[in-house]
Length: 333
Ligand code: AHM
Ligand code: MG
Image 1 (cartoon, rainbow, N blue to C red):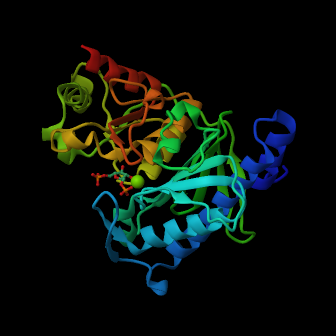
Image 2: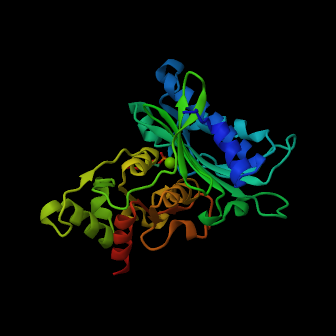
Image 3: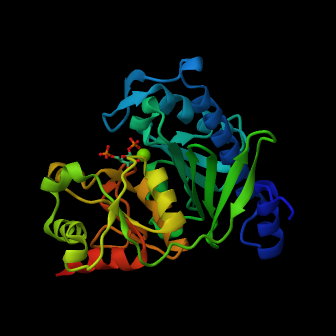
């Protein structure tokens, strides 16, 4: 069977389905190249002195790892010069990064979490990069935060890389979800799973149980019922997995189903949740929906949220349709 590289896949999407244009194809290629560079940096680990803290805090007041900073720079530099972007925004930067005047500007906005799951870097557990692409609103003289504040339904593309035992790139252009595996010898991504579908039912859930005492009643009820297993109201045993890297947890759900919850809890009530809407919840929600799953805050479809700030946080419940819909129903009771 012919090997379909990411480049070939994108060209065929453009040629046969007309769902992307040359600029968007170029953008995805550039992001994938940046992910390769990040994967190489992570792979070197201590040998390149890239592990450990950077000694700085990001806009959220979280201590940055060296690789958070390195990954952010790789993505910025890779995407600055191509003429495909109007601006970029990142978990690691308070304000949008504008395209320097010496380069042409394009019609897209790129938003990313350069290194998701960074608490796992130093312990050699999978981490990843999450990205979302929006169109820059027309007639905006100078791009600022407001240009980015569009609901997730407006995303033209979303994806994430997982730097694990293999390096993967999961991508949606609004026409299904596809997974590419990095061929390290040839240096390109190869299509390895097409049109991924999330099973509607599951016996696996992912939540940080240490927060149980802070959860709201609907989430507590749902998890209690799962824990009760065969003897409880669900009549079956459930298994639990929590990688603490959303990219790895979501990839598992894409592969064999499951539900992921980072719900609102008492200790982060004022922040609105733990995960960030623009570069974590929205791209993952688009991917999950494109794969036949559901993504909700418990009270609202994630993709329908009208963002109010670039680094806004939201509760996230996503994955297998029947399980997420059950939790949503509990919120309504
Ligand atoms: P990060 O982007 O700073 O790495 O934080 C997001 C991560 C997610 O990948 C993961 O699901 C969650 O934080 C884990 O949180 P916790 O350590 O509270 O379990
Ligand atoms: Mg993250």
